[in-house]
Length: 365
Image 1 (tube, rainbow, N blue to C red):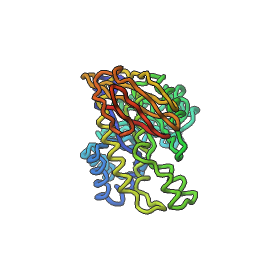
Image 2 (image 1 turned 45 degrees about the vertical axis):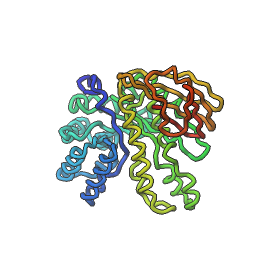
Image 3 (image 1 turned 60 degrees about the vertical axis):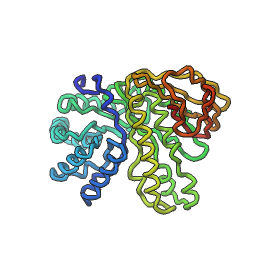
Image 4 (image 1 turned 120 degrees about the vertical axis):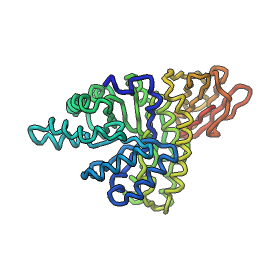
């Protein structure tokens, strides 16, 4: 896949920011509502979706409308039509590989398709199948990379993917931390992939608890705040991740025991998109992240400097434990104005002090 622009100097243009969605079903039942969703995503600064329900678009007219509207609204699609489930279904017959090849040709001319979403948390014993799929797709759709959602050790999956990917859902309540998530991301980063597009957690934990039966009061206690959700993405950015696909869009809008939380949740995600887009020139510059020495008077903190290559820097500060009191000498980092974006850091006399509880972060500009 060496001809894919992912491997060129234009990597800055390939920074997906979006959600896992179920918009394919909405497209079938209410096209106007589908288009409104795309317009909301685009207007908020999101540019990508991992589409769960694309397989429902069995008619060409529906597929054409779906992908055309995504293109019109600047939304890139991580398409699941060539995923392992499709491979397995087609290989129930002897000519499965050729049927898989033929299916890929149906989709390859849709400009909105940005990547093949090929597997969702499969085990490493499926890597030989992923490798077979990759051989076919590298011939039929050389401009569309394969992207997995991997929750296991990254190394075994390298032969069956073009871009690394996975998901992290560390938030489980007030005592949750990011220490384990950081170790996992470090393992992905150590593989030095061409790119890594990961899935930060937003609103999914409460949905799992809701299925178990939960009161409105307890449901709201489990609602992550804006900084907690941003922290997961910022931690990923500190570990060389350049694409962020939040899980999930449909959980934002589902009914809750505490009433209609959708508008307030969406407002938080819009703010998160604003921060991530402000960081984009630094995340995608291709310049190596630099871990910045600091003094932790509480639990461990990760501090990383990013440069845009134009003389400007950003400092990512992420708490990895429960209680953080971290001091940073800003003289170590050139191109900083010393402004806290998230309000969790005080800056005085060239020193920055970050104080956060549990899953928390700040961006110093």
